[in-house]
Length: 432
Picture: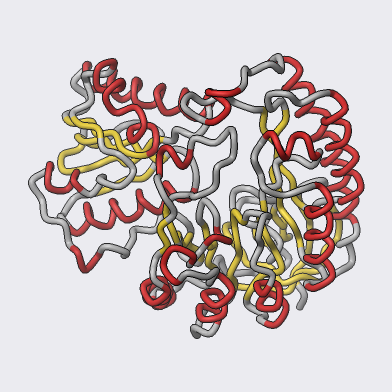
């Protein structure tokens, strides 16, 4: 146990990571030593930032809390605090079940941990962060909450109504990050496309991205978590016209059969989805689409799933992930449907879907062999420099493994000629 040291553990999505980074900056300003995601608890204080989205994530969060609680009972830890989505939703239940935790905080009151430690919260550092990512890229959260009413989702129950951050505040944060050497920005929100409706009474994502792309030093902007219904199509013009806006869009579609889209309350039809994807590809040539599909939602038949498989085969998404339906309490589904697809069927459908996608991914990657792509180097290991193209987001997408024939610098951009391909990674050599 190291005196005056705090371990911060982040579970869940990159939106949680931003909260942890903001907290760590405040802790550092108050004189603490901070370590993020340590392999073994070392500090005298631990703070766990939890996820509460689906069953597996909740279980992981609870297990992490219990492991630190056990360390506390062995006098390996003095104080244990818990924050984040799981704590926001189940604060009273967790407090009753795990009394070793000194205090639980929710999704939005985590800054109270500073005063509970007897320290000062520095308002001037409210959007400053201790980056846990490599110093050349950062996540930028442009909003909180969600106003969508998808049948299966507990996020609105946890985060509340949609709340956009003012454009000027986001621009100020970007300028500050650029001054610290950040070149690449992953824009994140539960729903990027809704941005501005609450604050400006119209969708302002295209304007926001345009304004940020004008900031000197912003090399790449990448967009995550768009919603297909009522998509602000002027964003495609911005993508096409601005070289530093990556031709990449993360847009969760969840399904394609009309019965499932209706049951899921997605507010879009199969044909509208197909037309939207075609528009993406027509207006932004070369765009790489990342999407997520759900299998095993209540009522999903084998015919619905086969329709989804056919859609994926025909559409050939550059990036695709999938997850089995998780029945969440207090959601629309919890009140209107039963979880009627067996777990084994969900897993079998997910495996089949990802098998199809792996074949597609390999074919699309093989088409890049012989091409020269702009790559940012994230890190170095014994055999390769490891980087990403504009079509690859950190953590979730593939990487480019670059041979060491030439000395490269982490955090810099290089032209790399692709020599070979695997389903999710590329291999290349730097162009002299």
